[in-house]
Image 1 (cartoon, rainbow, N blue to C red):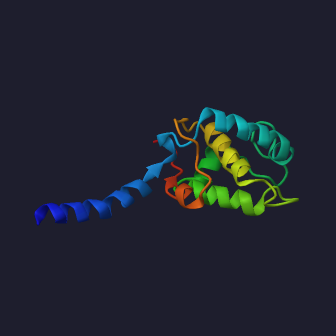
Image 2: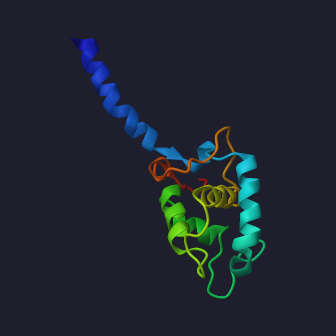
Amino acid sequence: MRRARVAIFLSAIIPILAAARSAQDGVYTKDQAIRGQTVYREECAKCHSENLTGGDGSPELTGPEFLSRWNGKTVGALFEFMRKTMPTDDPGHLSMRQYSDLAAFILKANDFPAGEKELDRELAAMNEIRIEAKK
């Protein structure tokens, strides 16, 4: 009986722990970030600059201000923001893979470490990953 209660408890806790992942845990691959950099150069650099520092009316995508704006939010929120609003002249025209690759590139540009598995293209999975600045 006690073993059954422990199993039920663990089955309830494990999803909560999974939702507590951090972008500091290596949630994208180097190859994915390289693909994202290619998409960035083609689709984003004209407004956000080659080095992601922003431009006239376009915010920076790297550095303290970016991290302050996104700290505590999820990678899924970043992904959805990009998908629904970027590029401003044709929002949503990129593929899910391209938006996911862009998110990976932005994480890399902000010194989040790469890992062994690509950043998922499913919003639910990305919503389990918090963007947290290094402490």
